[in-house]
Image (cartoon, rainbow, N blue to C red; front, side):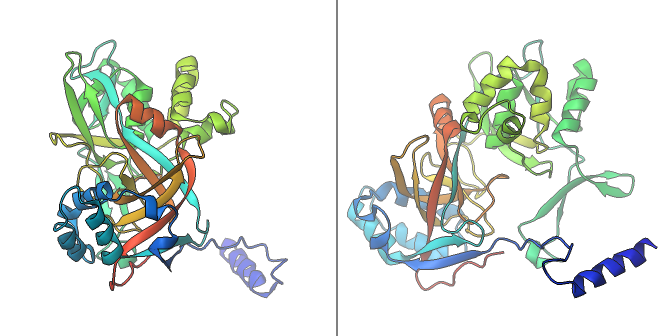
Length: 386
């Protein structure tokens, strides 16, 4: 009977006038357009300093692939500090393309991120009691690219429940398992515990940033890099608090959220659990800085995270936005060195500010409109948007 009803409903939709059809509209996936642009038409191009941008682009050349390989070879011939040669390199090696989204047009959102420093210890104590997990042994990663090429940038995470693959534990479930085990928190997941944080909100934001440093009681620091994620989508805790009237939209910065958490400890668990995504870390001995998704160290104020469905990692981009809570222009050539769970869209970027408190202040306040132009090697086919 239910099947018959479904058939009749579909048939009715096929015959009914469009304005009367009860079927919900089908949302088409976002698409990218790449519109050729002249360098002279880029805002502020003639006044831009480009040598630091060249060095940032070259930082990704160790992992360059495909169309970017020849551009990297040319970049290596530019002498350090030669501003005129850097400008000549960008203008001769690349063609500029304005990025246009089928959903947001030529303007999108530019947020900021940074490498936080979180206080903690190697062993748990009454003060340091929030575990920082490595990758769990029971986390499964399903890559469908070999059987469905259109999903080559999609990887599913889960765990085995008997013979079934089910979603991995959400943040709320991980928090509940951790709390339920009391002093045996290290066994809440079949995962190594890399350290213990003193503040759950600081740990939460280190997961949102994707990397950080754990500052031990003796002053030593341990760099923690992104290792994997539980497969659940990222949800904004700021939006959660705005929707519940806890903060206004213009108050929803990282600093305001931290202050709200300190003032409302009884509501904190529910707020943190509103983001089901959970990040697992690994220790990194690389002294150069946090490592992005491209596999190279991020360059403060010159690396950005992008949606790799539309922008190849390693590519340079011209970014035109403004400084946090300001109309002052922030315009420069940056490099696509990273990705992020919340970075979804053609004209969407996360600007890396660096390490520590000052960088965190800038990152936490940044949510600006911006435009982006892809700089792509001359004569090479444009990237295929997935």
